[in-house]
Length: 305
Image: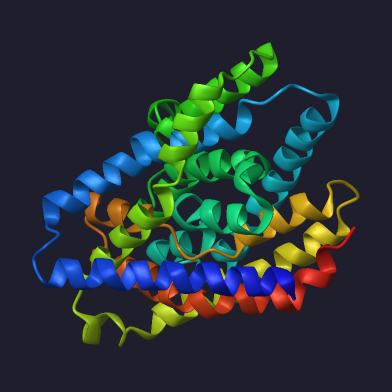
């Protein structure tokens, strides 16, 4: 119950910030260039800093075990998510992408931190990297139907992947983190929630709301992304003979997040149905305000070790 209440409070805060982004864009106080700049700031600086800060910790056998357990559990969860999306949307690449990949960075990180503390991004760093890796490989094939679009070079240059590699190196080398670095990183990381939600609100403001909310397939994608996959994920995590309740809860919250915005970017880039992809991101983001606390209340007991 406590977890559900924390999530409700955090999601209410995020919803208000998203509403502010919507109003700012519609009133012309936040424009196309501004949203592009915010997106770059988040992906190139804020999220990488959060991941480096969470991984740059004193190396212990316990923390190393947690990283390994997180990587194993994340791989299994992503295999489940991708398999479910492919089975349910075999001929609709845009919907398949939207169902398979959650918005772990913009929404997953702040929710996990609100429930488990500021350093909890450590628990889901492997999941975030795995999502990025699969989006630029399997995800591109989903969107385009062409295996030749897989971009391994793009994956290796991805700021999230690079930041986790740097953070893991700092952890492996057991280099002490100066107090000043910890303070600066913490301050930069605190920008994630307000900037991400303002950006998502602006994305929603760009759309024709009547048209977006009239597309029935977007609700089917939201049902799979927000309810079916998290429920299956909770059952999988329950069955796994590894990982603490805290780790399983962090991964569950990440798996319950809405569709990632990269699907809309890829759809536009490769000439697919950009409006449908954008609608799936927007609708699932709005609906997650209710679905994530609901799923946490329903499935929380399954995740107890």
